[in-house]
Length: 409
Picture: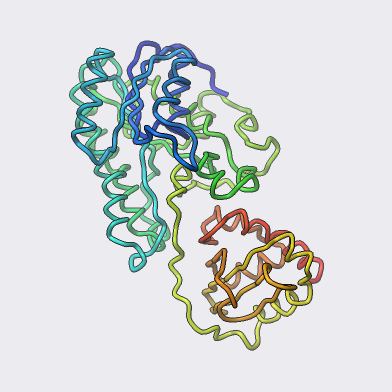
């Protein structure tokens, strides 16, 4: 792991969304240098599912050696941001670093995305980042080594990043476009950069969504915090960069990355992780419109379901207790189900006999790979091949059936 050098000692860092997850990890890393941290986040009262508030984060920051200022801030509210900035300047004498970490996510297609969700994502990701930067910049210009760091991805105009969730990509890329524009606008005065993880990152939201099985394929938030630290201690000449966490840490001399693994020795699904895992608790709705199972009678999917019906048993039902619906696209499009909750279980084409606990949306070719043991649901989900609505933990339970399927093929 990257060692602290003390370079952020005495600096004042304004971090949005710092009550938990990646934002808090960056705050704690800076606190170990003796930094002053402004925790600008919405959670003042305990969340029913997610741990941490601005006050518990403040206590951890001060225990780590820093000074903390917890501020209730919704980044869509200009008045709240202004008040937090004023309090920071009054308490600490200025602002040296801004980390735009707060974000919202909803991974749905154009027709399935309510305008309320569009407004939320644009309001937090794009407008919130722009507004918080705008209000902090007059104070950053007075700092000796000012930085703005946005937690946002490299700009890539490949249509594949847009087609399944145009609104989210627009909003998230808005944060990256702030980097592109502001880095040039304030070149020589303020360093403005973006940071994005190379792999999935385990957070409280990820635990809630996917449980320990997903967590095993993730890295800890500390890798992003270390990468942020590496950026923030650089001079203002380091600007306009879209940084991947692992890449900058390698340049800093870090050679051992297993220390960042939730489960050391695990093989990661190494992708430029486009989904902001820290925000997955908002959920996503698959963009598939169900219709008739037009390939139900014959074909590879039908053959696969014949095998599934042959291995159903009360034991599998007892250990699973869930109803699954599969919305398949591609060559063998259709709707199928597996009922592992009722009686001895059942499986077939069309809608399930009772409400599905989990809806999986994927290409029929990937469905065949999954049930043939060549593609794990967790890997399919993390690579974007599989969309899941419902309990991710129940989705993972299907792997037991898939293991049995593999022996039958």
